[in-house]
Length: 144
Ligand code: SF4
Image (cartoon, rainbow, N blue to C red; front, side, top):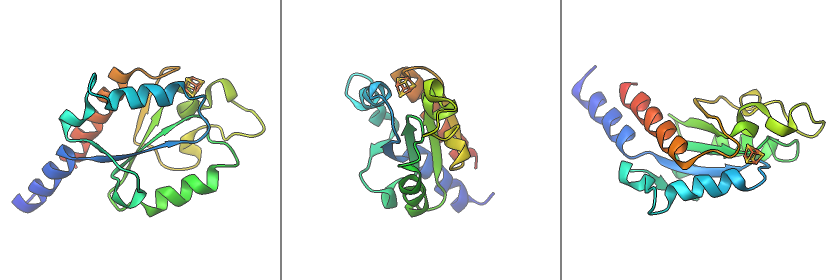
């Protein structure tokens, strides 16, 4: 691996920008993910920044079961993100459908709709788990 590539990976891993998307969550996971971004947990100390546009985001954090209504929007958002892009499934609903598993109106899991790089368990997720998952992902990005 050349010096330039090393530098690019290091910079990417040190400043991942995230986009947060609720595909049908009950709101409890959202509150916990947002808490991870507040000064109390301070995800920004790791270089992370919350962005409002998929075109500026490296990591997509998804909460909730993927409903049939939101599926196309989720795929459009994923496709709008520049490469390399990463997806985090936050909470039991996103990882496996959770309480909505096998319901007629939701997909089985997030990874049955878009590729997922990291999973966070919990109902709801804990802010500490969000921080750990994002850090592990950042290390993965740096290693390439
Ligand atoms: S995992 Fe639990 S807290 Fe999170 S969206 Fe599903 S039901 Fe709500």
